Image 1: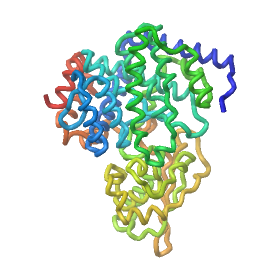
Image 2: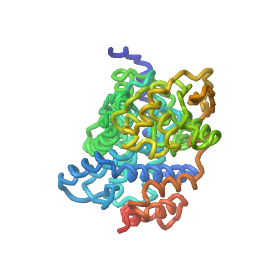
Image 3: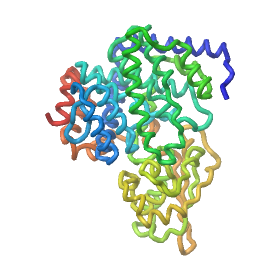
Image 4: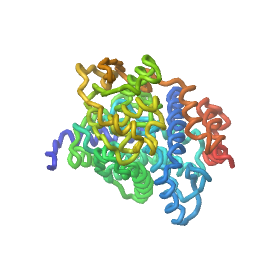
Length: 463
């Protein structure tokens, strides 16, 4: 049912949208604060590693064959073995397909949103093709991340109906490209509003059901973002009211226009990002940490004697109900699978969500012995995603561990050494030079910052 239009709120949202666009154009001409630059470099590093980690998945390999057959002028790199170069759109969509596939990309903690995954596939392809520098990439990423995070906060869904990869991917991609090409305020507004008007209503339940098309929404967003900027430069775009019309009237979200403009330049969304070491939906991470604590306390053989697992979790964790996942995506969005796999394999990393886990008899049996219950009482942020796990043993004994808030967020971030080790694990087998190059970018090495991004890419892929 179409939502009734609140004309005053629509006008206020349009005004806030224009203020956001004006700030973004100005921020592109202003140096980044060093902590923001470093945070952006971490996001770049983490998401590139996630793209490479997913590049060997069979469906990704097959999709690359279709992209390669499209022809066209090679302009940008697909980050997979062989480092094939393709036209901008094909490179952006293939990297966009991979970026969130392994669930190892970073995310935004204050609203459901993986801003880096929406921005980088298109931004990196355009930067490589158009001769932008490494510093340009970092600068545009930080500002576009702020825009995307603000959209996610300004237009919250009352329930998880539309997946954020569908809702905000077009916004992030368009913002990154518009900043890279230094559009003026009017053109920037046309590009961002135009991309917003093409937001798809990808169903959130597709992730839980394991529909692999969910991983293509960030790819489609990259393509739409690229096109929206091209069209904006031709005078084709949306209007300042488009964001309200799309999200509130069409998709049924709330509207909080103050989130689009409040304290612009003083607070940065990228400071509230989180990073993962577990290869699954972040809503399960606190329960996984509790499970690993039980492993540490009880020893390596204890999990062989589990009769039942009781998981008390937050409301969003309670949505992850799949018991017999048909795909690795469904496994990553299944609390029963996650808790069974971490019990059997003693890890929450890639090995707990690999293809072979779907048919592992020990994991399959234990998935049917996981009970989900609401965690009570629920605390406010940052402890709003807790997990309490109880292993009920075959001899009747029970053991409980609890995690109020999984690591990785701004309140308890992983140190850079941990994230560099994750990067090494994700990409060194395919691109041995990539970790060293990204370390230099993270450190703010002035020589590499001034390099064209295409030269940094050549260095990373070993050309």
